Image 1 (spheres, rainbow, N blue to C red):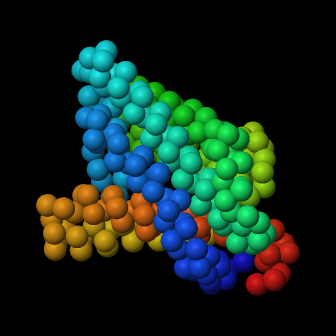
Image 2 (cartoon, rainbow, N blue to C red; image 1 turned 45 degrees about the vertical axis):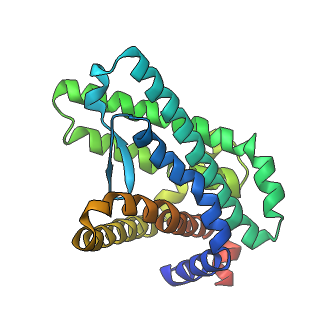
Length: 245
């Protein structure tokens, strides 16, 4: 499948279910905002919130406990948002009832995605702390983080679209990425360029409010669109869908 039919399906699904998808993305917004509101050592960049791992060793026990609780809540909310958006994607093709599927997914798929992201977050934290001690955080940490991010990139999509467990979803995520690597790289490039352009414009127009507006734009507008597009890329692995386009 070429990029044109993928973009066409993405745009049709996104615009047809725009308000529903935006509603489903609100938990993702909360997931990005909560860490900053409770004082977790974090910073905003390119529409996302990142943990300041260098500050973790200096935290008190109370602050560490608060940080852990905050991270758990944020991971769950982001998992909930991603699962629900993918349910909308699947329902747009299967014509199933979105409301019923969202209720059913809360105790199953959302929790499964939550555990996947929790394990990934722990691995990322270990990498950040270990490479910081080695003095290699600047170049080694981004490389290892990128590998982990790519490996689990399509896991939530696979778990919702194909209704498979995390182990099988990991296999399908890796195999799909390898088979659709040009499309995945184009997807990553499109997201990065979009974020960079919007941030540049906001910094030029409303610099003091740029970080806040970037988080709003990223979580409510761009992230849902990119998730929908990623779902279309994943579904393009099915021969019957490719032939229909």
